[in-house]
Image (cartoon, rainbow, N blue to C red):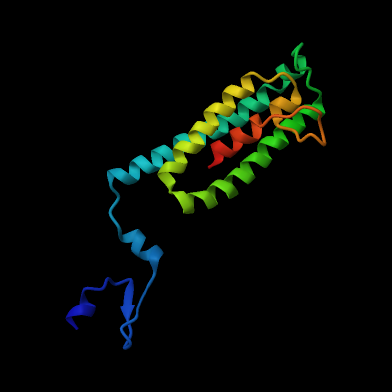
Length: 155
């Protein structure tokens, strides 16, 4: 009785020595600490910055269409935004898989470096293909800027 008395009210032990528990109920019983506050704050800031980037990309569509160098059409703006979304999805899948293999801390810095490099490269775009990383089959020139930004940002 002494051993099973130490098991919390959210867990029970059967005759075979197997303990069944409800993980959500156990998590609800834990104390909230400073670490949890910092994690929620960091996630909130990241979420805000992600939304800011998407909003800025949409707000800049008019400037991209009026640019004497880039001269984006409505189709080009939609294609660039679609490339961003594709990069976000592929980045989440690919970097999520890599996180399990090389570790979260190392991959965080890799994706941060990828994001910063791709953002700087986007500033140097010379046409829609270099801005949005459109494959050669769709456009003649290509780059990896927008997909890499999304992949680095989402992971």
